[in-house]
Image (tube, rainbow, N blue to C red; front, side):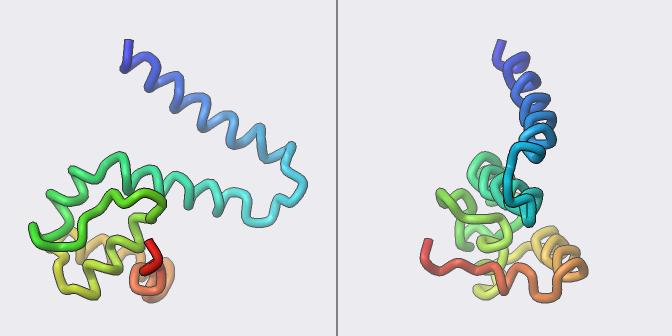
Length: 109
């Protein structure tokens, strides 16, 4: 039952994001805002995976409520606690947006 509900939720998120776009008055930044919300969700939801694969055991832990993946990656970059896969991911994000993770650090969380 859980897997069925999971699939329904994924379908609803995809379609409702697009449908909702037409009801939003200020469309500027709509998809960027949605992407950031999904980023925050992924940081929290998949924290066990990120902590195991991307950082050293004593690194800054993923999963803090309200924080983006990029912020957590940036904190580990600053602490020099990224594993090889974490460094690779940071490099890929930096290709899209220079110093992305470092600039995404939110020390207020």
